[in-house]
Length: 438
Ligand code: SF4
Image (tube, rainbow, N blue to C red; front, side, top):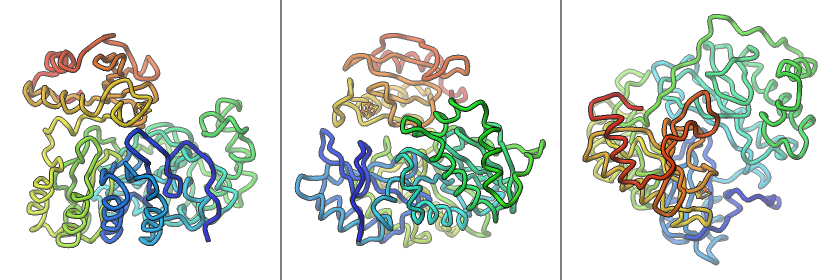
């Protein structure tokens, strides 16, 4: 029997929160993986109980939008029946562990992190004390894959050094300095003790690791305290360790796989959205050509793995026919847009519609910038700062920012007041066709 759901403004599977277009139900997927039968269950429930609009999130989760009044319980029961729920209600919010969508498949991986990911998710679910973590508190497990979004700020990260060792970092991502090294067999106890220590030290206002670290002299102090709770040593970080490179642009196309004769096929969802009909068709494709698993990506797209080499092209074409983005030069692959004023009360502008308009301009002029359109400063749609941000200032105007290490937040303000067509023309001047992405 599921215990009561705790109050929060964030949607969950058991906590459907209202928006202008109806309720939002967020389904947290272990490692971003959705089995085809579960995808079907979600699609059918979204058609019956909601608008059929689905959203892929930047943490590789999935949301059902437009949940109809009075349909909440039916929807939740259908999702629980498909095995998509937490073991106890209080654990729903804390199932936040980001992996590469290519975990276990990527030829560049240093470690197949899937078994450890499963253990860490068990730890989060089965330790009642950890259910007090904020719904936003998140862990990242980096196996060294080439297809990975490392620049995705987390509260705690573990990155594979080799097949048996992991490096630990706090409040950042694997491109930041690592603090300690452990054996892979010690990782679950390390995370357990670190999270319990965090909860002991943090005040109610310090929901995230970076907030706690801002109030203690140094991360080293936290590590010293952590060491006293462990019966194994925290080892020094080897000087030679380098994190894997980050993938800047959303993946699309056919990728090599570690396993011989198999391929990974990746595609983007237009501005992170799919319709239930598309999800039903993708579930069927994953059974016909892949391993019956859909891996959601932090670029708000999908990856299907274990596809026989001879079938990969056919699968990619089928995904394109469904309306997914399969060409790397598609301008929409470089655009991220929040829900915007069409469905969010905080939105100043219809950012999704404006992103489509910007994509049209870019298609005409050949520029391929990476741009985040945000209809208010909360910046929900992108966990990392994109090279460019268009922040709505009126229903038809945006401020244009460029990311720079010197200026926190969105970066340097380049233009205070641009229409979307003006922004399209600006990108064409700055990034003419054929020049590298921003
Ligand atoms: S960024 Fe603002 S307008 Fe956009 S979805 Fe989030 S809260 Fe709504």
